[in-house]
Amino acid sequence: MSAPELDMLKEELLDAVARAPDLAALEDVRIAALGKKGRVADLMLLLSDMPPDERRAFGQAANTIKDAVSLAIDAKRAELARALTAEKLAHERADVTLPVREGPLADGRIHPVSQVTDELTEIFADMGFSIAEGPDIETDFNNFTALNIPPEHPARQDHDTFYFAQRPDGERPVLRTHTSPVQIRTMLAEKPPLRIIAPGRVYRCDSDQTHTPMFHQVEGLVIDEETHLGHLKWVLEEFAKAFFEVKQVKMRFRASYFPFTEPSMEVDIGYAKVGDEIRIGEGDEWLEILGCGMVHPNVLKNVGLDPERYQGFAFGLGIDRLAMLKYGMPDLRAFFAGDLRWLKHYGFPPLAIPTLAAGLSL
Ligand code: PHE
Image (cartoon, rainbow, N blue to C red; front, side):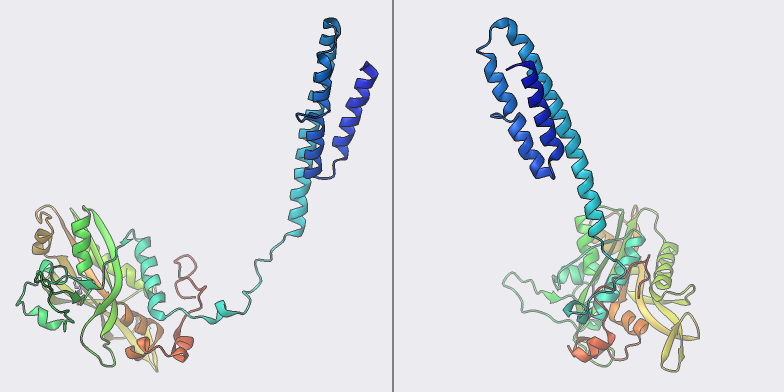
């Protein structure tokens, strides 16, 4: 093959590259030119039949063609890719300001208990708490004994416990009467410092306008080496302000008794009733929302923690109560009646996910 022929081949290949309309066509051109059975490979085959003095010059010429074509392909590929992106950007636009289309998704409602649980979780997670969980069916030890409520302790009577039948091994499981057994589970499983909340269902044999046999609590537990009552008050005040979305709350800490905390307190929140509306942070009516206190040394001992070194606080909040208060729902029993009309009225749109940044209740 003569030098002019080689030049013609080079021009032909470069021309094919230049005219490739898209990436797929360019790939075909590449295979036809530089592939194992391509035009440049054909040139290399000719080498073996040549006298040595011609071979060198011919080999160099063939390589020059190969390099030129492969450079041209790379450049063309980049150019086509850029064009493709520009084309996509021009046509694939989404108007993110469009409203969500009406449909089954927009019809469904989130139950107020789920919504309020998400709100609580968001607030405490922001304060550095992690989420712990425990089962609804508990051992007597976790629900009572480890919490400093031994058998025959009078506090057991307050709980209206649902007991299961006794098992052959003597164990008599209960439906947990509070979320406090999650304190025990957490302290047995992890080493301090601990900072958890544990939302969940609890059960007591009780039913009227403000009590249902199943309801919801969120437990809080902090264990560290220098934790005191001031921390507890701060956490609860910050929580109440964030939850009720007000700048100031009135809180009243009343001395109380729980076997698993010492000292123990019940916390009331101040509100005013204006017509049918409840206004948090004003007025001089009080509503109890939670029980709390410093974890009792006996509880720490029961889970193998040294009370001389560790201490902390715990609290238990009624979630359903908080929901009634915040969203003005008068009857607790309606929460669990499964009436779709109630859910349509009090439920939350599924995309109204509570975040501190966007506002808890949209
Ligand atoms: N478990 C208690 C109840 O259900 C609430 C509570 C939790 C009190 C933690 C103190 C500390 O009434």
